[in-house]
Image (cartoon, rainbow, N blue to C red; front, side, top):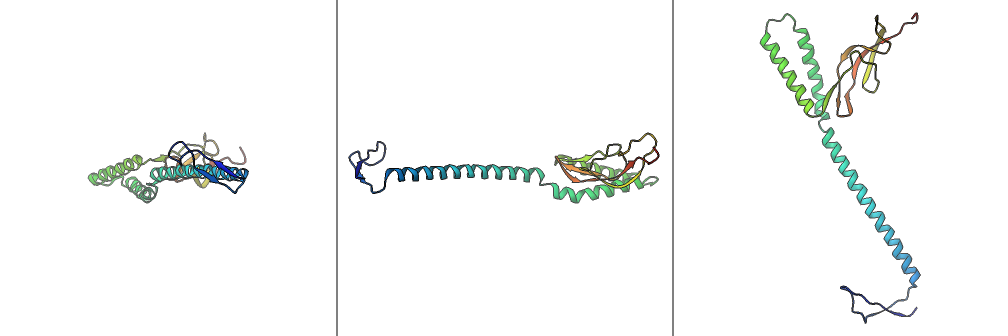
Length: 175
């Protein structure tokens, strides 16, 4: 290969500049093609990384309250049990204060996307419930139905935060 004249229009070398090349054009074209592909792959990889980072940021914001909610849920359960045991207690002001506190906690959790899992009377759902016992089906209750909730379950958006702990009915052999 000899000498070739190269002309550049915008911002390059003047038109009369000559460059001496000792490398075959096919080799240079292959190298350019390879570098263009690498550039495309790098650009695609950067785009994918940006999308992944944005998704992770979004997930962190959406599910960030999970840790705090997990710590608060047992307190709510204890307050509910205390209210259920308060029948006959004369201190109505104290009981009403506990009810108001409980409502405030529930409202705060709901504002962060935490919701109660409805379990009582529902068909057992192993993705949201944990069966801790099975009892024979009472009259008029289908097998596999939740007949008692031992511990309430909660979700944060579409994820189970704490599964409901339930007692499920089962059919007896002589039915």
